[in-house]
Amino acid sequence: MSSALDRLKNLTQKISSYELARKQNLKVLRELYTTIGIDKKVEKFEDIFLFKAINLSGASLLEESLGEIKEGKYLQILAISYDKSAKVKSKNISLAYYGRVEGVDSAFKDRVVEFIIRYRFEKSFMTLEHYYDMLEGFEKRGE
Image 1 (cartoon, rainbow, N blue to C red):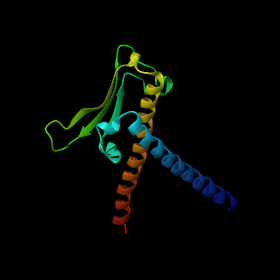
Image 2: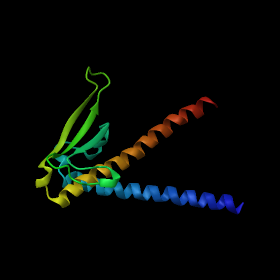
Image 3: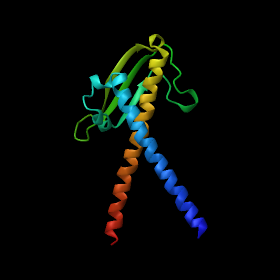
Image 4: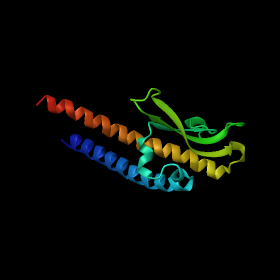
């Protein structure tokens, strides 16, 4: 019985930890949204999550080389919108352009990279919630 109780405590702590991390992530993400100028293109913070994805050119988003610049490239944030009723289903939209990556202040570039990672972190929670809700539909069918 103690083993089951310990597992439940561990699971509760983990869920609580994820929710705290998510809440803190959203707070910092909202700050970065204005700091790096995304608010100039996307008026409402919540609307950034309407994009299918947000990508970065000019700097690496890979774990092993996170933030490393790609010389000769331009630092730019690109959003991917998706419209299933349109002839061309997806399109790239520039959310922010900062010029040649070599000319961008390193600390600012790091904030841009952080924005992308934090966006993806929150977007993954939203995706998880979406599929969780979809699965509930199967459970209701079985009743």
